[in-house]
Length: 635
Ligand SMILES: Cc1cc2nc3c(=O)[nH]c(=O)nc-3n(C[C@H](O)[C@H](O)[C@H](O)COP(=O)(O)O)c2cc1C
Ligand code: SF4
Image: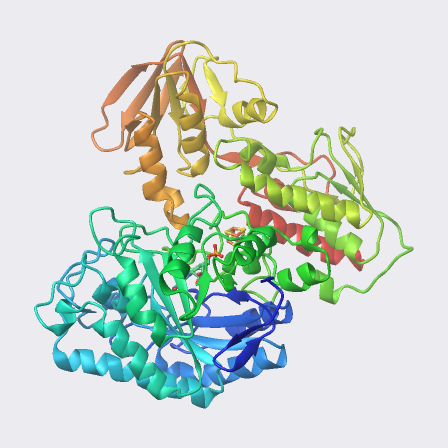
């Protein structure tokens, strides 16, 4: 089996075995699909994906899990536009359907949550109502109605969610289903009936089941030990079974960040294959971001289809590039979860740090599609080969213009290269390596270790630098985290005095955590944060619990709700934000993992992009680099 060979499902043919999985995009409005959502899917289908599965549509009005969630009564019309767009681009179009049950929210629906038993979700702690017979019937009817609507909309089929946020999984799980009736005695019954209702509502359509095969709760629930029975019961009822590791106690799954190895759910696919044989097709997902890994899984016969969702958010042309022998030119997904994970307080729309046009297809120009070659004009000079400068150079070169990229460092990457030096975050460098390789492929002249001071450029993207400390100090003893990471990047052990260290983390991002975990191997270490929890900002990428677990496992002491107010030789003063009390710590050195500020620009009026405007994330750097590149290419 090869990734790009066709696969037959319920009498239909997908042009390849690649799936773009259903995910929350925050691109719906009024509980219906929007032109933005359709453009997002169309772009992935145009890039060659075989099967695109639209964002899950709750099958019943009792489920309104997040503000921008669609719902069946209002989304069915969007399905028909989605089906039309996918078919025009040559992809199969499936609709994900489900119900979040206890993992929903009453914040929007203003009514009680449904669940098999009144077990509060671990995230919201909201106690749901135990579903009565008529509630069960209403939701099952919803599954049938949704399937009928999918058929009428021209979809090729539907995928029922029994994965992460799903009522169907809750019925299957001994962690959530304590019913005394037939749905408790036979925990597969609700899932079976949902499948039967869907089949009845959409005869001849593809019926897929996304199944949590491991809830990652060692004390109970679905696991490699208990799931075979469920697999045997449900496999004959569906045309494909997508296996995933997912459950309420493993919030970051089924799409964990870069700390989890690629392809972590492959053993579950192997188990499913062994258990059900050829009873249904097996699909696998979970941090599969390289075509080689997908090919390897298929070649081993562990699965028939591969869901590579984030990989195609990052590069919508993944399939086209792989098919044209250009897989080395696929923009990598670095599994950062920084822009594609949308369910946080910002309520942002889906996007990608490396491909900021993702989710903004109707607003942001696609450089490859829009640029008119303009060879022969003056070469463009870009100063700074961090993400902003590299992206700008790439975009200008795509238009056929000559580009000189000058950089004072001996390597491309700027702050990203530095960030990638911290243990567990090395994968970030892949984006820089890709940008550099693309620039070289497009003929950009990259001049490293170049004398850039005072050099005249069309774009300055020289990044930021550590901000001046806001605490009193007697000089010495304070080391910017950035400098230590630079040392580590060059393979050197940071030169720090013997004794305990204080890592001061006013940012709450991933840098302080990974640096602390690296340094604690040689020094007793305290991490101090102004927040009530350490690493508070990594909550947005789903890594908060895991980051705190890493700090705990490494034996790092944490001081919360404090400000670093003064440092001196051998000491640091922390002031409690709650009581105002000052605690003096005996420390050999302070590591300042604080904010950065822009580097001064010595060319007045020049166009600037990235951290030199204001130090933020890779996403803003690449976005601004791209916009600058687009403007320069045609200037
Ligand atoms: C931002 C985001 C939101 C997701 N939301 C859902 C969801 O609501 N339901 C679901 O079944 N899967 C969801 N997924 C999982 C995807 O459908 C897909 O299976 C998964 O992302 C595949 O893993 P990969 O991104 O590592 O390729 C989500 C994925 C992402 C990236
Ligand atoms: S934001 Fe990060 S995890 Fe998400 S698709 Fe882009 S690179 Fe991958």
